[in-house]
Amino acid sequence: MADLSGHIKKFQKELNAGTSSLVLLSILSRSSTPMYGYQIAKLLEESGPEIPMMKQGSLYPVLRALEENNLLNSTIEPSVSGPPRRYYTITDDGRATLDEWLLIWKQTKMFVDTNLKG
Amino acid sequence: MFNTIDNYLEALKNEMQSCDTALTQDALADAREHLFLALEDARGKDPEINEVETLQSIIAEYGTPEETASAYREIERRTTPSFKQEKKTQSLIGRVFGVYTDPRTWGSILFMFISFITGIIYFTWVITGLSLSIPLMILIFGVPFAILFLLSVQGLGLLEGRLVEALLGVRMPRRRFFTQPGLKWLDRLKALVSDRHTWLSMLYMLLQLPLGILYFTLNVTVVSVSLALIASPVIQKFTNIAVINLDNGPVFLPYWGLLLMAFGGFCLLTVGMHLARAIGWLHGRYAKWMLVNLPDESAR
Image (cartoon, rainbow over all chains, first blue to last red; front, side, top):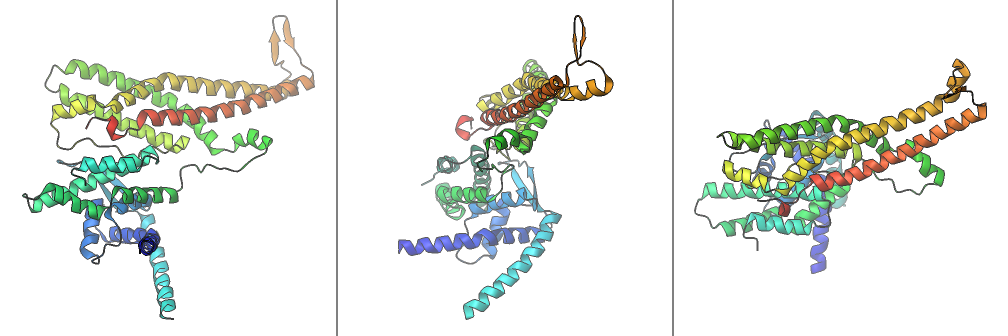
């Protein structure tokens, strides 16, 4: 049984590796204002299914990697009561990349669905 | 299991012991930001909450320290570092002359030139800031002034880190580690003053002046001497000016002697390039040790 849950976790992790970047980029492309990590996590929690697809803590390194690849920009805003917040916005490069990714996603989804149906 | 945010951060830090310190610092900053905001949020909804229980459920959603650490490690593994360390075995000649095509060499040389300028700026900034902060302490605005100065030192340290990462290829923090939120002015000053990191950053900045001068001098000397030696055959051949002048007049070397000089110049340049790369490597490690702090070394 432990082995089975290991397989489930591994599969989920591998799936998340690509989809989390896609989802985060898409959320930020739709947002008219810069967003910080916790805000995004809340948004995902509200819209998401009962079982969380990924831990909230895993969002942050993804955001950072996206920024490193120039798909996102970020600014630090100090806050009165707590640690400063890092606000993310999507870059033009990010938007262009998102369009490409969406296309790939659609094709992948179709491919997987078709083959699962047999 | 974790009764406070700091407990969690401590566990996360332990979990990331094998990781790069800069990555750890980033992960801790992210976790601190998230957990703090989530707790604030919960408190805003219901001021009567049981803080420990709430934190447990927040952490359950955020991920255990192991999960969080592995997420950072995973991403770091997939992200290409500034300079990929090439691990291919080269022949002796390849290793000796490969230094000319190694981006790290050129990064180091550029860094050594820039250090001259940044060294002067840092030194002036620190000396001015210190000599203004200390006497102003007797006045009411002395405290905010000192805080601003100490914060500026940490900010400059972060900036220097970006420079080191870009030119020397050493992973440095991408954001600063924040101390306890909601502190009073005087407490904030105390935290900054008792933070080893502040003083190490300041020391680093002061030392950048002599180091910057040394690097600059070394660069200019090696480059100009070796280029002069390399150019010597051309100069004597076309301008008929002797490249060696002794007390008893100019000495015209035979052609093979000139070629030998040029070869010597080329060797010197190659050695100089190796030296620059080695200095860059050493400086990167030194900068990391001086500028990267982990929370147990800073007063919270």
